[in-house]
Length: 231
Length: 231
DNA sequence: TAGATTGTTAATCGATTAACAATC
DNA sequence: TAGATTGTTAATCGATTAACAATC
Image (cartoon, rainbow over all chains, first blue to last red; front, side, top):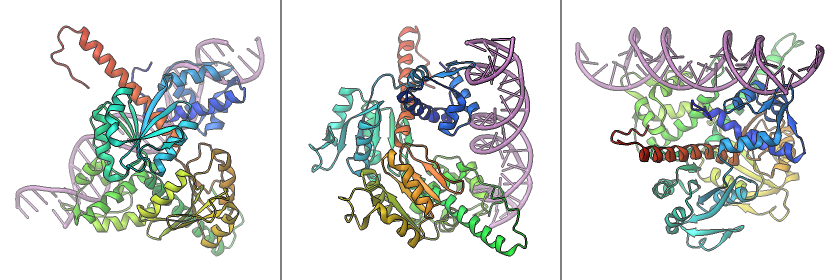
């Protein structure tokens, strides 16, 4: 186990490696080299080897990594070896999507309850998962020892829900509400603001458009557009 | 405008600054210092000043930044000054959430169409937005000159949809499908894999749990737990 | 043994932080 | 002018890339 804190960039890549390993194992591939992992993931082979080396020597020189063994190791490192139970706050479209997705496609994390303030939704189900009233959350969280929660409520309600969750034992939150949450130091909050993602993407698309436009102009204007590298 | 390419980290922060400025303007705040922006955003004042300085000198020494002026500038930098029209592929829960959200809460980006393969959805609407058949996408994209698309279809369909979109002029994609897409160099793809986010969050929550456990043990074992710093 | 590929150390690159002169 | 805060340069920190010895 690591002495120094591992960088966030490394941690963000681990689940990607895990998914690739899952796919390889399903395809009955026993061994994989860092070069092959590089091809599948888009990261460099050096980086992959270095990332893994932070946690131990999991490979075999000359041969590569045993897929099943490496998978086990990564699962342990992330902490997915014990089944993770999580709850979702907000049974809107996003909450529903997240609940559905994580109960069917995510083999490592289980959504076991959804909470919503809207009494018309309470008592209904998302697939097999019950929707409870927000008031029932404290008891539920404590009873099941829930440590991880997903917040997909409107921005105005997000802080209140955070306070509630944290107060009853939640220490990790994935927040989809477009607000900066306040929370105690021991709590981990990751923000997944889909609007921001989309907006920053625009920057690159406009840059690209301008580049293309400039290109068109230059190509038109220049006398000899023979050797023209796109870069 | 910048000579050297601006780093991705800077670009990711710009929409956050923009949102804070929007809020300040709504609260009739005219001027804001980098220190206040730091408080609102969680980034350091130095970093904010440096980020902005990449694009020009927008502030007034001794006074700070004019909120309306800085907002205008950031909008121009990101490329949100021309109304951005985008389309969503996949009218499932996630696609619906994204469509709703960006048509009501995102003042800078407009979803103008949703495409889905499921004929039972075609012809329906998400709020005011029409759901079209996937076959109609090529014509629609070309007619409206769509450059940005959101992909929220199942993993198995994502590559096909990407190919289609790119082939008809899309140059920027926000991809929610948990697959590594292949695409030409001139296309920008941002991946927003919600499962991966959740999994990497688990790492920190287990680390935190272990730390708390260690703490409990140590506190129990030690004779004099008088001066005990959490950090 | 020869070939392949890891694990690790060193070199480079990039991003953040600190410091401060410029100036409102 | 004095106080405040920007814009910018220099210093530090951290992450990625390159190189290669270790070893299967």
